[in-house]
Image (tube, rainbow, N blue to C red; front, side):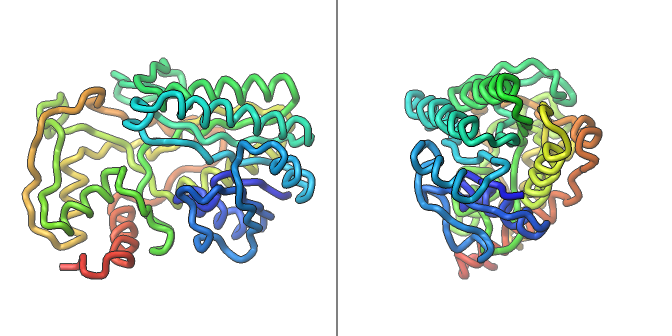
Length: 325
């Protein structure tokens, strides 16, 4: 089979591309280079530079490479930016998805994996978030992911396309140092950045109803996430007309303070975090139930939080050689 991965040169996309190639799948990537890096991709991958919402380009790629399935990762994904620029997020994440799905239908592609997010749940007030937990997003980013799921499922039902919507929780780590997250938007690289600049890590609120008062989250290694994509893609290849909506997490909660303690231990820095006021919209606890994923795919995450931090730190030090203490 040949899979098209949109946004496949990005942080998550490059891991997915490598996992699929290693498993013997043929892969073509469409990436506009806005956050993607061509050097992340293995030689076996065909890279086409351009937008995943360019219909003419999509038609050429889908037909020219005899694509049989699509993994759609290309999207805008910064929560704060989505609040400031909702029109941009709806145009890129919804209108762009519509163009891609039109091309998929026209080309007769019958498998579609959609990159969704735990942001669709908003601020869940449950011990474990299941796929049946009400979806109540609180920002435009989460709204576009939920609306994207609706559009993917509706298109699948109407045109006989097997679909999978994967709701990621908090992604961290690196499969190889050169594949590490180059952005400073998620908590692990944010803490690395402050430490290497001589600043203390920040904790936003320590008065939540959790064991140590800080927010509890579910973290998944990006290499595990890539394997989840491969498992979902292969599940869709087994039967026509499938429809999966799955959480992708470890089913284990780690508090912000616990995560920072691991980071300090791995990096060798001895700095006391500073506690600041709560941020609006932060849930006290957001931990996935991974039961349905295990049942549907026969797959569960294997890597723990320490391996996420260690691998991410190796990647950070590759780009910042003076970061080591």
